[in-house]
Image 1 (cartoon, helix red, strand yellow):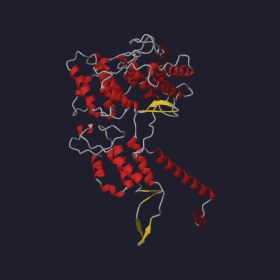
Image 2 (tube, helix red, strand yellow; image 1 turned 90 degrees about the vertical axis):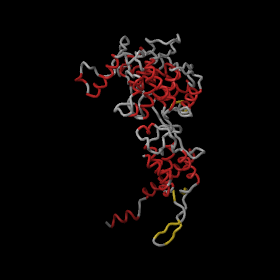
Image 3 (spheres, one colour; image 1 turned 120 degrees about the vertical axis):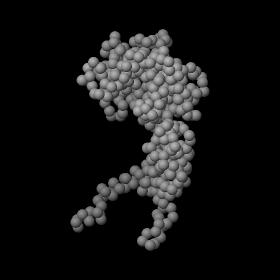
Length: 455
């Protein structure tokens, strides 16, 4: 016991050095935080995605006929720099290669004009073929490829537009899906109805439902009608849920996916379009994430909108605001995170060892002036940040959450700059904690009260 007390009382030089190193690291981190803060008091760092989001940006511009692809060289640089040594692209750093991610990156590079004999293309092709080729890619990749005639549309799931007509009291309806799935699916209902095929840069500039543009990635290019689910004739090879969904999809396929001759198809499509238009933010965004933004533009164009229309142009401008460009090239973020970044940074600064309260504290019956630190909780910069956080509380009439909570008052926060329809519990809880970290009395404020009630 005595020796232990001596160790505590007299820390080693190594411990003292570690403390000094830690203290200096914290000081540098705080300085960096202030340097990266936006002028109006908030933070917004890059949200890293894998190569698929950027590849899909290339597909998107190709589908709009915007060729050559805007900033194609910068997108090409990013995609090439993210290829792994084995020729693959992965879903996350330090993860094994993924066949779907790799196939999308490969197609994007071909659209961007990287030649077949380029070293990166050859290594990518070899990896994809080792994984079984294009036949093994995920459902979303199939849909993207079907839009260019690289997969038969019949080899993608049936998505009848009538799904939007299911009332909210049914156990299966669009409002039972998560917000990102719902906002992506509804424009996909339109896309799947039209089954549009867009031209590829293969010389003729015309859409080709039997395109050979990607045949080198197929093990058996003569048979592209590859099933994406378990066979109903071999039920012992799969689980009950997979079999159930395969059965539903097979039934819809037999009905022709409730094709246009179905009496309510035109009405269902109109309801889909109305839903998409209603939920477009005034800044052009949909749901604060890229998949419904890409799909929303394509769906409206398929339903008669023109590329020059203000609604379409504002959506394309919103998508461009999600891009990030530096020496690593240009890439597309799947989402932007200003509210999340700001509330977490606020908590970090307030909880750090240099953050102090103002005034005096009573200790043991005596008043002691609290030691002044580099950062005080009443720092005007923090106050400005708190004002920014409060200004992003969503108090308007929008929100799909009202479907099942019609009498609940608003009060939530969302993740992004422009996403009034989908506040979420995570951001709202983090905002509450940030406000209280800066000022404990905020627990009694109207902002915290309405946010808490909303959660």
